[in-house]
Amino acid sequence: MAKEQKPKEQKPKEKKLKEQVKKTSQQTVEEKRDIPRVRILFKETVSKQLKERFSYKNVMQVPKLEKIIINVGIGKLMQQDSKILEIVTKELVLITGQKVIITKAKKSISNFKLREGVPVGVKVTLRRDKMYEFFDRFVNLAVPRIRDFRGFSDKSFDGRGNYTVGIKEYVIFPEVDTDKISKLFGFDITFVTTAQSDEESYELLKFLGMPFVKKDVIVQNKIQ
Image 1 (cartoon, rainbow, N blue to C red):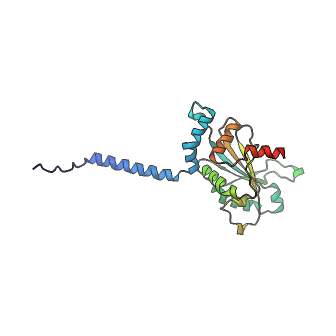
Image 2 (tube, helix red, strand yellow):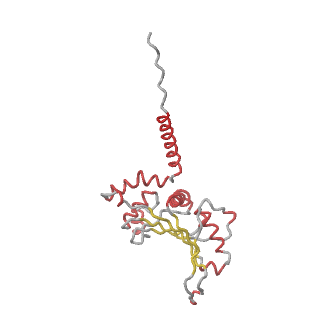
Image 3 (spheres, rainbow, N blue to C red):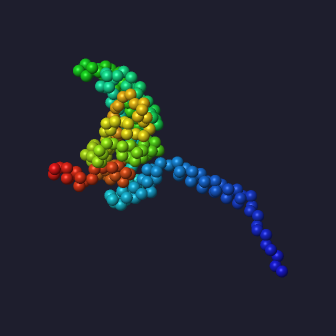
């Protein structure tokens, strides 16, 4: 009778190599789980759609979202309530998850009752993962809570591929506790892209999920 062959024992080097490969693959899966889904959407789908849409020859030509700037003007509000700076700062940190920058007046203007060094605004600049996470929450959670919302206008591009939208009330964000609101305020959100034209920027934001007003709706409103 033929002797049963025993399975060959793995050499220490081969065993160590397999363990390293397994550990690396597990880390890759865990890292992918932490990547914002909008970033994954851009990398796997949107970049290909834009390359096909504009016939880019190089992947580096594909426009992308570079940063998001949230800006709150508090000049007039400061005259009504001295605590508004503290309120806006606290709420903006809660919404964005990042420390804010307080902008101050560079010079005094008597006509506007403005003195040099007085706080006139609060802003936050989001980049990388925090930027994509904010975009996701804004489009999918905050925007649907806007009353009578029919889509954002496609006329708010600056000619250099950047898009700005104004929000009247910050309470649309789910992070805000409506029972603890003491003062309402709005802010501007600017989406800065690497696009060379407004058309490219429009397509980029639309593919990422930005709810623009449909072209046919705009035409109907003009006719009416």
